[in-house]
Length: 504
Image (cartoon, rainbow, N blue to C red; front, side, top):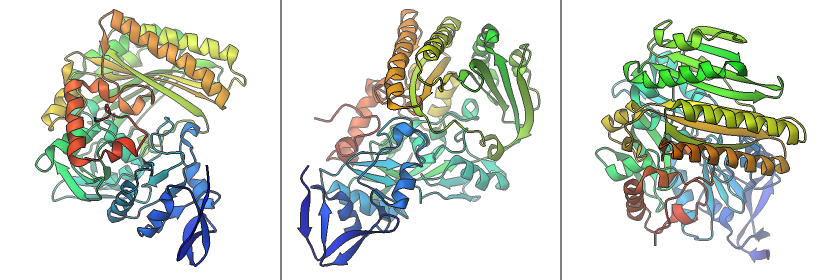
């Protein structure tokens, strides 16, 4: 690519930290788009170029190595008005590609970062406030859930949010959001009462059930397709202590866990205060697969009878129980420093399909033990119960764009994940993960158990997430895009994330 040398009255240069600033009358290098320079001209103070300390810190702040791309610059707005300036400036140059990053937890390359473009880094927009008069918690997109909980827990209130504290609010909520409260009040996005959004024009608007209601629905699960969300006003609730259990079992107890998971999922209509996740995970430090179960009751009830199926499984390696809150519960982490590959499948709650997914996970682990060059890999065959009551809660709260109301059956969302070292291992591992995912989908479909919905926050970039919401909702999203982004900025200049079909 040619490098242009342009003489201007104020030219850019780097100071320590990689900050973009100017010196009158000097020369500067620019790529043809010159996207970073126009942001500085628009008044953005925090713009960081490669080779600076802050730039390097931002690259390495992404949880997964797969997402640690190197943009032309990172730009960190301080407030909504600066987001507006940035979006308006970038939208004025069709050649300026950009990404939007909140917490940086996605494993998909390009979902929240970009090569040869600008990453709009919302990490400075990270506060949480609570208004007792309205009962609304206002959460900015760059907030991590642990900090949200540490703000709200002392006030005796809560909101549905990420189960791991390092997850960011922005991407989590715009993708749907599984929480400990999912069976009681639905997906986390269904608790959003109002969004503040910067449109492609730079206009700052609000979207709620009363104002811009079509945009309001599309933002609940529609990803980064309609604007940059700069505030989520969420309905808070009086929180109770959480009765929490953690269990680990050897892989040999798989059948008992599968049966318990099936019964649990079918019983959630009558026990909406409970939450459970069950997953098979290969741990290199143990050189074996273990089964991990997390159980929670968010009403403060101790020892709910619905837990008995899990608690009575013999042979536990370890177990713990405690009364807790989200500030403590969200301290759990996921291993960092790996290249992560995630896929998702949703299927009706069926023992045969759960068993098949577990068998295929076992096959993957055995193959990786033989073929991995260093033996250092981790897996998850993670089952999230997805009962039909979740869709009904969403409809009661104004509806979302996910299309989950098409299914009246209880379901399971599978997260299939593999964490490896090195690009060569990632290429090899991705092929094996595709085999696993395709086999589960095909088996589910053959049995009539496949549910079309794909959960955005667990999906690989190759999966058709928005199309899985159903044709009616795809058409709604296209109409919203035409109305609020008529030039298709978020379809063409924001290449990452999941997109509806291109508007002709």
